Length: 272
Length: 247
Image (tube, rainbow over all chains, first blue to last red; front, side, top):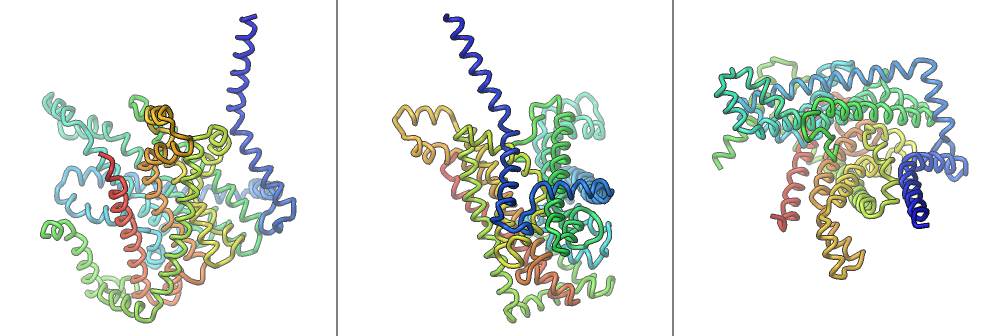
């Protein structure tokens, strides 16, 4: 009898655990049901909130016609090209500032004053200088994404343990070797955190530049749908942009776990 | 004093370089109006009132949206950490929408609320809420179990405990989340005003640029940049005050 009760308790605990596991699917289902419910109830017009079927149908139609892939590709290209430039330039500048006092003196106030500025306000100036095409979009993305990378690199390098450097130098490591084999790996968790802050910024800015400048790309397509008062197109654009953001940001978190397998901070930082 | 002068000298050097490049005609003056001309047109905009009316519109939108995001976002985060069913239902949605590039919401808020203040406030509220929620959630979840237990054993009621123990211990991470939210609010505000607005600093930038009035445009761009910088510095001062009780 006691065994039976114990078994029942275990079963109850198991099914409780299962319920917690199922909760994510439940909440997404609830969200879609609420969406459908509100749009079908007629409380708001179909223009204000087209139903999920129409929105996903629109996404599907864009996928079949191939427009979706062109837009996704262009947005990704602009965001990731700008992000890559920001990552390389940011890490390089961070290292230069950490090693060279003149570079530190010159760039430190620029970085600390420029970080909190809304760089997107410079967009019309960048358009004025570089035109309406990919170059200005990519420059704008890099300009916005570079600041967190530089700051994080500086923090990372400052946190490298002195003992590691001393013992490497004692054992006869050259400066280059110290840089590549000690400083860079030791600073990597911080640098990755900086990159994880920069990546969503890169996506936001890429979408905004497309919205302002038009042409192709997810932001531009959403804006075009908005101008033609095609609200299903607007909502489809949001779904597509959200999906791209989700995949890219989660991909970056996976990359972090891969690169930092050896490090206790391999898991993504909680605020990113 | 002199150390600050040395520290910020590079910014002065940049300003001098700007003025020289423009004055020597190395680039056309429509691409880069001299800094002195930009300063003069800044005072012109101030006198004509354009800077003030548009600035007030932008600041109103930004602060209203941010206030909503902070209040509702923080409450949601703390409730999520405090009550498991809410967490189970809401956190998948937070995780789903957190990585979304928030600029995607610009057209939809315009569909819902048009060109005016409402759509910007809604945009900033929606776009800035999640960093605050996540900060409050992580902070509250990590609140010291020992403190919670001892408060409970001393007979504190649940709401009392929430307010006296959980909220203060969630504060540092939450304040961090709010800093992210402030930066995001500026980005979203300026972008949405550049794209769909008839008022505001972002609108003024776009309007002056389309008009070919580049010196005033540069003046407004620098003003917006300075406001973003000043907001961050001011906020950090406040945070230092608020967290002064921690050692």
